[in-house]
Each structure stands twice: as structure tokens, then as C-alpha cells.
Image (cartoon, rainbow, N blue to C red; front, side, top):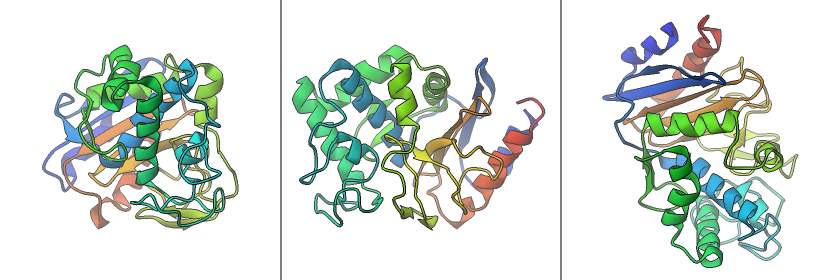
Length: 270
């Protein structure tokens, strides 16, 4: 794909990428085996492990978790009211979409307690091993502490397009707006009304500005990380992409990411 060649001009020391469709990996760029810090892209992997725990019956979406009145689903959808980086409630349950890394730490601790296995190991057994993600590990907090490479995340993206880890019903719920109508901030991109989110996945909806492309369907979902990383899945276009860099997210990434993602959508080889 000609579109991926544009990555050679990005103002980063290292970058790798892959584009995935129903037919598999369409193209790659850079060293797809190089391991990068994922930052908040970690949440996609952690959310998937929590959903596997739901499938296995270790927890339920309506299991109480977090502040009083909140559940696993509220935490996954950033609707629990927990603050960004603490266990303190900054709002009532399902009142606002408050992006909370602390909420994912609560989820990891819950699954660890209910499954009787350390959460990093649970993530490996539930998500990484079945998908052949041999270079992925959770080495820090559940909200932002994973490392991985493009090869592994391409496998994860492929599973989003054709789910094997989750039932069709739960996979669909994960990428469907949960607790609709909540306003909130997307870090780095300001407040959105509404700020749509699924079960761990940010959903594009009608957000602007945004890190995905203007040509993406409203059902596009994924996550970006402050480490200069992102992964998106467009279920209408039947395509996904992952880009990992080693430069922290900042002004350089806006509107570069959005424009780049549009070139992928416009690429005749997609």
C-alpha cells in the first residue's frame, strides 16, 4: 500500500504499522517485531481479557466494581465516575464519561481475585496465547503498562474483524455504545457531546476533531496511546490498522494521524 510509505516522513525515530482486512494483513511498514510501549492502547488488551472473564463466568458485566452503584460495564465504558488517576469518585455513576485509567486497575484486580490468577498471566492465557501474541506483556498498570509489537497487534485486530475469543454477541456489545448520551473528554482532543464508548473501546461516533479519519464510519472503534500509538477497526469498511511509534503523543500527531488514516481509507489497495 502506497499510503504506508508516508510513515517514512513522520517526525519519529521509529515507527511500524500494519493494515488488516478480512483477508489478513494487507501490508506492513517498518520492523513489525520491534516492541513498543503501548500506553493506553493497553486498555484494548485488558478490556478483552476482562470480557473473556465474562465469557468464562469469573465475573459478569453487572458485577459490582468501583464506586457504589458501579459495575464492570461502567468501568469498561468509563462511566463509573472514577477520576482519571485515582480511586476517588469525580462524578456519580453514569453521569459523565470520565476517562479513568484507575478504573482499569480496579478491573484487573477484580478479575485477578475472582479467577485466582495474577492478571498479567490471565491476560496472557486469555488473549495473547490464543492469538499467538508472543511479544506482548503487561509489565505495569492495567491502564497503560503493556508492551507489544505490530505483529501481535495485527493478530488482535484480525480477531476484532472475525472474533474467536468472544461470542458474537459479546464482541458486538464491546463495540456498541454503552450508557449512550454521556458527555466527556477524549484526552488530547477535547470535550465531545456525546463521548461514545463501548466496553473498553472508544467509538468514533460523530466526534471532531478526532484521531481517526473523517472518512471512517461512525462505528469505527479503537484506542490511541500517549506513547504515540493507535489501533482502529472500521467494521463497515472491514479494515483495521495499527501504528506504533516511540515519540509521545503531542502536537506533531494532530492532524497527522487523521490525515494519514484517511490516506489508508483512500488507498486503492485497501
